[in-house]
Amino acid sequence: MIQLTNTIPETRSVIQELKSEGKKIGFVPTMGALHEGHLKLIRQAAHENDFVAVSIFVNPTQFNNPEDLANYPRTLETDMQKLEGSGCNLVFYPSVEEMYPEPDLTVFDFGQLDKVMEGRYRPGHFNGVAVVVKKLFEIVAPHKAYFGEKDFQQLAIIKKLVSMLQIDLEIVPCPIVREADGLAMSSRNARLTPEERAEATVIYKALTAVKENYSWFVPGGVRQLVMGEIQESPLFRVEYVDVVDSETLQPFEDWSDAEHAVVCVAAFIGKVRLIDNIILY
Image (cartoon, rainbow, N blue to C red; front, side, top):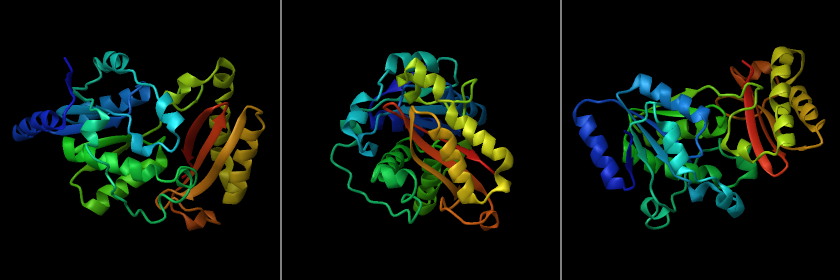
């Protein structure tokens, strides 16, 4: 039976008792509308810890678009059913008032990490993410927290947050979970029409094609290739394609300038914004 808590004191009390017994706590923060990608994180957390807490909270401070916030699916009953048998022990499901009894005006300085890619198009988004993740880390106080690599920039920001604040916690990155045809799993996929869903695989096809022969081109050439492949589909509008250093998230001119590189994409298909990435090396 999965325990459901709604308040910070109740959640802290459960965790503190477990920690006093020497139990290791794993944590998976989510905004709900759970899919196999989330469940894989939870199963890994269950394998590596004694107790797994999952948060379900649609965080208003990370949405730039009020319409996006209003449309975000809230499916607690279905989510709880999906969590059965996943290894989840506790779900923390707070209200906005519980998390923000008053506005949190904290501003973090992530240097250049939050200025590129998503940060260019969603100003303030990562500050909102950092504010809520810091709160959740303080409430759950886990030993390990699990994040998917699909949100590659978010993962880099959270690692930086933990380092900056010297939080005693291990961040565990987990590979992207994909549908059988390669589409990265996302709660947003449910909003695609059948035609859009069929066409949505174009992003992954472009990324995998370029991974096989990226060294034939300069980084800027790879960017143009991926963008060109996606834009061949009339349903897509590309927001960005960037080839960046995996640590700094900054673009570079020559492959020798980056020890590890990743191609990151954001594109609209209809009204749905999809993101994806592939690690080149």
